[in-house]
Length: 383
Image (tube, rainbow, N blue to C red; front, side):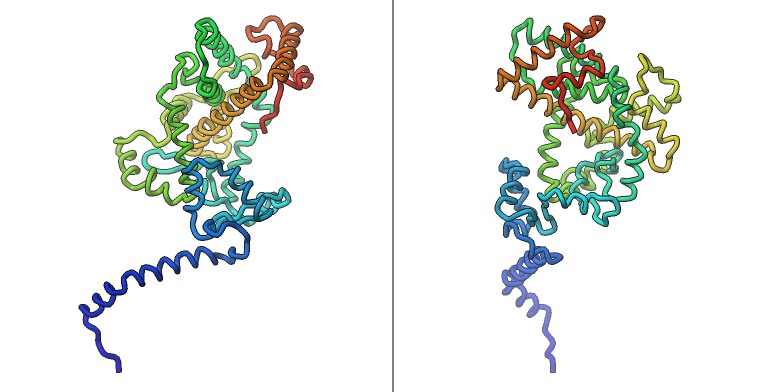
């Protein structure tokens, strides 16, 4: 016969064995992580199988994730368990199974912290859409905006930024003999290029020789932040997208999370006020990327909504400028570290300029398409 236990007795038992109870819960938590979905059979670091904090630790202490993963693959093989629910593959044969058409696998929450916020709500772009069908539908809808033909037709939007960048570089750094922070200067250049491709207007960073609205500094902070929270995306919901932050932004008491949102929304509002087809073209140039997306949005209004166009615009500015700046900066760095390669490049460019078009203020860059293939040192493919 069971004897009744008073509340006082029950609380007393719990308090006396609180450490034991807590220990059991902690043990159960880590055991569940370790044996999750049978992944304990996959080789990998033991701590990585227990918690995502393993990866966060290495990010915080400054160890590059790609280098760390390479070490793990060298130690454990082609397939490594790198988290409770994370497996890394180094064999390229796995690409078809993971990313192939019809694969049942979906993108993980890793991409959610990249989503921009507007009026207290997060919204996805092509890069941050997790579901396969919406991602596939959107990719087909915007594909024409980023085809090789389309990108080449947009080159006239790049040339003015290049010309102004050269003028400013000569005026500020050559004539005044100042030391140039190439990384910073190329970020300003790349951001103006990308925004001009996107909206036919820039933030004026090259012209003003400054980080307008602190966008570049914000991008530096954002990538540092995302590199941490992407290891455990739920953290973003407590830090950058928590209910208080959402309410403040919805109420207008906080600026948008992503510094490029306001600029994108202003440009889109300007276009909506008039028919994008009325925007003039010059020198056979097609409309900018924003106009092309808005034209595609008319054909597929359920897929490419105004909200999605805003998200795509922010995503392009967010990722495109930084990637471009890093690539060009790396090229400059390695050229300066290798004088022989630098000299070969300069000879090639000088020869092309001497035999190329004479009517362009940037004749070294105004090369005809057929001559690009003859410049092995000057041309690179950024895939």
